Each structure stands twice: as structure tokens, then as C-alpha cells.
Amino acid sequence: MLEYINSPKDLKKISIEKLGELAAEIRHRIISVVSKTGGHLASSLGAVELAIALHYCFNAPKDIIIWDVGHQAYAHKLLTGRNKKFNYLRQYGGIAPFPNAIESEYDPFTLGHSSTAVSLALGMAKARDIRKTKEKIIAVIGDGSLTGGMCFEALNQAGHLKSDLIVVLNTNDMSISQSVGALSSYINKIISLPVYNRLKDAMENFMKLRIPKIGPRLAKVAERFEEFIKGMIIPGIFFEELGFRYFGPFDGHNLELLINNLRNISLLEGPILFHVITVKGKGYQPAEKFPEQFHSASAFDISTGSLQSTSTPATYTSVFGEHLIELAKRNNKIIAITAAMATGTGLAKFSQIYPRRFFDVGIAEEHAVGFAAGLAKGGFRPFVAIYSTFLQRSYDQIAEEVCLQNLPIVLCIDRAGLVGEDGPTHHGVFDIVYLRTLPNIVIMAPSNKEEFKLMLDFALGYNGPIAIRYPKDIAVDFNGAASPIQLGKVEIISKGKDIALLALGSMVEIARQTRDLLLENGLNPTVVNARFVKPLSKDCIIELAQTHKYIFTFEEGSLEGGFGSGVLELLEQEKLLNKIEIYRFGLPCEFITFGPRSKLLQLYGLSPEQLENKILHQLMIRTQ
Image (cartoon, rainbow, N blue to C red; front, side):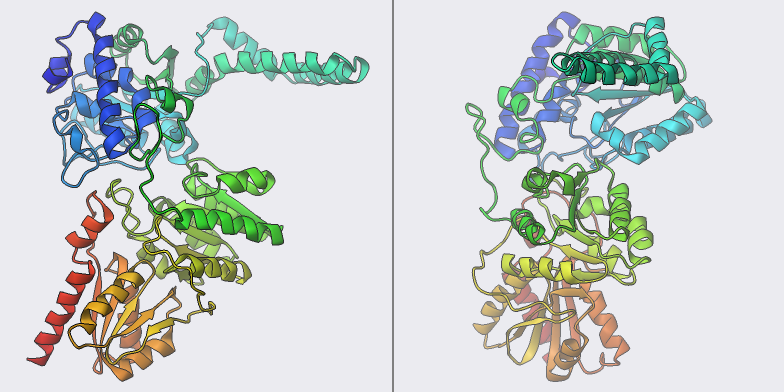
């Protein structure tokens, strides 16, 4: 059936009784493709029936369906005309990994960050109200979205505005149970009364102290019963208090139930919360058993579920996790913080060894940084591990709560630079730009794993804010001894004449390779590992300007306002621009598409061969 579905109009031709077969086809298609391309498997498998039901009941693209983040959206893509190109999921020139407005009219926004859908949907709903049109606006969010403050801000305003809006909440970590109406409300009132809680505490103490053998077990039974009762009623009451009409929870894999209820609520007015419960990885046993491993999976063997390794055995992420454990053994003030990415940032093992010194704050990057500021003020040394693209959300907290207070917090910025197949919403190409202009902060970037360890050591001993940016993968395994880290000091890799290649972080190895190519052309460049974005090595850069004719800067980030811009500004301040020619190599100020890192580097002229040609071209122009 899937082969004949080119739009939701084709979907509506299928009887409800046959939709279960279609769901099985869609799951087979998703598993087959993601096993080759990698991708967000578990969440998308869990939302297959939900995607079918939404498109069966509503009339997209006239009716607007906004998928928060897009981790759940593969079935949505397959049902909206993208089945034929789905083989090229996450491949350069193929299907985007997340909703993409350029790709399809069924994707109203290009998305990739969590907790945004309700705000976007509410804005579109209010625009509809002002236009006096009648289309339905639906936001699909996951339970993880509810850990983000932006989602609650939007829910709060939605309840106030009373616009027609449907929020579909898909959760997958609680059992399915039906609301019991007035009885639920009554029980909730009872368990919230002070007299009830005083009696409850007294009974628990009596059972534990006076009936020592069975009392604790009876207390546990009572506690579980209360949790069960609360689990049935609190979600509905919570959203009702926010101003939503609450429906659910429903079995998110029962198509007939979903369709009948979605049709019913589509006739209602005002804000509606439609709550479904699904199983992550539904239909593929390895993903059901290990949903976290199959959240953002590499390619895998379908028959065994074995994930294929797509990176070098040692990654900056793993080096960070292991070395922070070593530091924590020697310093009990170290605290590790992440935002729903314990495994992704390499902190899973740390959380097991030091559970009291590890905090996962959920999808709440702003809070992560503010929380770290409080810990630092309290005498601890927080290491905050967040992907570069997600740290953007914390800009105000970094400025106000960290830099303004000059607190000793270490921002460990993972996935800095090009991240490949996850595309424009996930590339970490703006962190230098948005951090470099802040007072008090020190910014570093390692070129190899040993240097990274030394930077972490240095950061622990530094009494102020530090950011260390690094990619996931280590391009070249480095087993030598890195030179010590000194504030604002560079590492001279090789001395030459006339030409200086000043490179940062991941681009140091590319600068080395570019130098080797230039040597074959009779040129002998100086290669410098900058190490620091801020403070720049003023003495070194001045010396390079006085002893060389050309400086070429290398960075894996946006050129506008980036590392090279900092070098240019320093030369201008020192009135040396008339003595030196400076050229900056990096990424343009645009949203970079998805594809393998090597392909993207080549696309933007940052391979060693392309850089060699650019340098030779500039030298030729200047000597003519």
C-alpha cells in the first residue's frame, strides 16, 4: 500500500481495517532504510500509528501539523510524498533528517530543537484567528519536550488565549490507564489535603517502627498505590488547570481508537491536549529493548540489532568522559551536568560512578547553565557538557549568570563544527561567534586528544568561565606528548617563512596536510596551533605579522565574527594590517546542509587540496 501513497489524500482511500497493515509496511520501510543510513529509529517507530491517524483525520497541508524536533516524523515523511527518496535519508542531496520547509509543503518549519512546536503552533493559530480562517493547527510533542521551559511558556499562553489548538502529547514511559472522571478528581483532592498527609506520615512511621517485620513492606504498598492513583489523574488535572481540555491517555498504537477520538476532538473549540502513550522502538525488538541506543542510531544489522561503528574507537566525547572521571577522583568539587544527553556527551559512566555529583536537567539548557552558576557560587566546579547547537539556547545565562559573575564554570561544547548527517539544526558552527564577544570567558579548542586532556586540567585550575569546543570524532589518533597549556599561548608546529597557517582545533590537522602540499610547490609555511580563540596570543600574532608576508587562518566555524575575525581585529588594533596580508578560511554565514563531514568540507572548499589551490591562487595574484 505504501507504494501508492503520494499524499494524505491517497491514505484516506484506505479503509480503517487495512491501516494496521500499512503501519507494518511503514515500520518495515523505516527499519530497512535506517539500518543503512542511520537515523532516529526508536522514536519514529513509536509514532507510526499516530502519524497515520493524524493524516487520516486532518487535511494537511491546509491543516498545519508541526512535529516538535522531528525525531518522530519518519512516518509523516513517508505519508507526504517522500517515500521514493526515503532511501537517501540523511544523505547529501537526499531527505532531511528532520522536518524541512524547503523539502515539503507538509513541513511548515525546518526544525531540530526540542520544545518549540507549541509556541510555533500557537503563533500560527493566532494568525489564523486574525485572518478569520478555519484550518486546524496541531502540535505533536514528546514527553521530553515537557522538560523544556519554552514548551510550558507556550502552554501557559495557549490556555490564556483560548485559541483553537490541538497539542498531541506522545509519552512512552507510563502505563495506559483510563481517566475515572469525578472519582479521580475526588481522590486527588483527598491526597492533597494537609490532614491526609499528616495521617499518611503518621501511619508510615507507625508501620515501620511498631511492626518491624512487615511494616516497611506495607508502607511500600501504600506508596505504590498512591503513585498509581496520581498517575491516572494528575496529567489531566495539570493540563486542565492550564486551560486545556484534556483527553486521554489513549493507546497510541490502536488506530481505530486514535482515529475515532481525533475526529471527535476536531469538532471542538479551544485548546485541547490529546494524550497518547506509545512504545519507543515499536515493532523492532532491539529498539524496544534499547531505545536509547536506537534514538540516534548508526547503521545496524537488522537481524541482530548490532550497531555499526561510524567513528574512530576514541572520540573526543569518550576522552572527555573518561578524563573527567579521573579528575573527579582527585577533586571532590567537580560536578558534571548535561541536558538529556548523558550518553551523547560521554557522561553515562560518570553518572554511575558519581551519582551524587551528576545532574541531568532534561531538555533545559538554559536551566543547566543557571544551575551550574548556583553550584559554582556554592563552591563547586561544574563541567557543563552540551552540544554546540543546543548551547545556543543558553546564551543569556552564559552572559548574565556566568560571565557577568565571572564564575569558574567549564562549558564542554561537544559536536562543535560540522556534525554531518543531522544537518543545519545540529551543526555547531556558531559557538565561536556567539561566545567570543562576551567578557571574562576563555575559549579553547583542542587539536588532539592529549591536548584535550591538558585543556580540561587547565580549565579545572582556572578561576573563571572557560569554554572548550570540540567535535565528536578525532580525525587523527595522536599518541605523542602535547606541550603544556598556558593561557593565551599557541603551539608552534613547524617554523617556515613568508607564509603562516594559523589553525584552530579540528583544522590543525588540515593545516598540516595543506603545509605538506605546499612544500611540494617549494613553499615552506609556518604552522601554528592557535589553541585559544580568547584570549588570542597577541605576542605570537604580532610576531607572525612582522616576520611573514601572509597569514591564513583556518577554522571549522562561521567566518563572520569567528576566530579569523578575531585575528583580523587584533592586527587592526595593532595597526599592522599594512604590513601583512591576511586571508580567512572557514564556513560561510549560512545554514549548512546535511551530508558526511568530508563531503561538506569539500563543498565549502576546506579540503587540504582546495586550501592549497586557494593559497597558491592568492600568492599568484599578489605577485603579479
